[in-house]
Image (tube, rainbow, N blue to C red):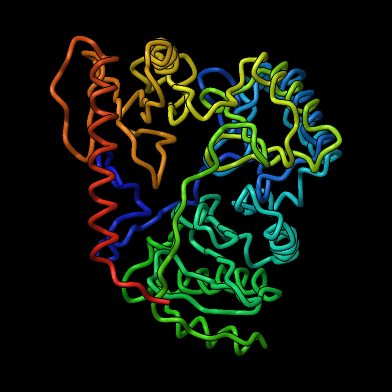
Length: 430
């Protein structure tokens, strides 16, 4: 894991608890965010699931109310930008008609990511979303609290969720609280209920601590969540649970773009025009809908013909230099940005040889930076871009493309060494 960026508040040590003096300002479909390019709406999609009909209506919303584009987020949601003043009511009516808007009290708490290439997690997604929307207690969760439903391969479990459900053999699932080394084992059918009870356990701890924490990692040490205490809560609620003190947590790479089953499509910067989006919807017709991933890609179950997508400017090759390139909004959409990072990144991608994992940031906040992946940090400054890898600032080189390529190659070598060393030294636990 690269350490070039400052720790987000959710990652600080419990010895230094975060004291929140307000609720989070995370945008939603009803709570619009004012940006330099207009208002922004974030439509939450539990598990990233979209029907073809819902996807078509989102394109209509982007054309009718916004700037004619849709953005994918790092939690598998969709954003509309450039919204005009006063469109909130009409937008809410359209989303409600599409089945994309629950009760207003719950629309920002449905933060659920799920293994995008798995059908096994779909019942979990739907049941957990149903339980959340039927529960008044969870409306106190911040818009940043994250559930991850992983089929056992370890893709979304690596995204620093607050509650993780991990599928295991034998009809069992593990439920993990934050970054705990252990977990609680429950029957698969009880996993969504256990995830909900974990969120209630967190809210009780927040209330007792009095810090108004947004994430599990923000709880002070004296109020940290405990596997044994969680198992006791589950038992009291009538759910059989077994504490597992240590778990060898799996990890795997996210799906790469390419024409396999399922087909994975990468829109550069996770941003699509409504024209590109409609091509995506057309290719998805007759299938099982679309799944937006936390890596700003779209998964289409099955093996549809990728050629229309490629013709529309979407990436369907695992060897594309666009793979791994992410960026914040930058200018002109963000007043804090020191550069048009997307334009600068696009110019460099055209010169890149092979994938170039790099995140472009317009300011020190580094919005949208990836987690759990190896990447180069390109930070805009008043004098150009400062590059860093593994916490090391790289020497300035006039040729930025050459500097990024060298940083990528060095990062890949370091990652291979670390992986080999870790495999040789890490004991295995169940």
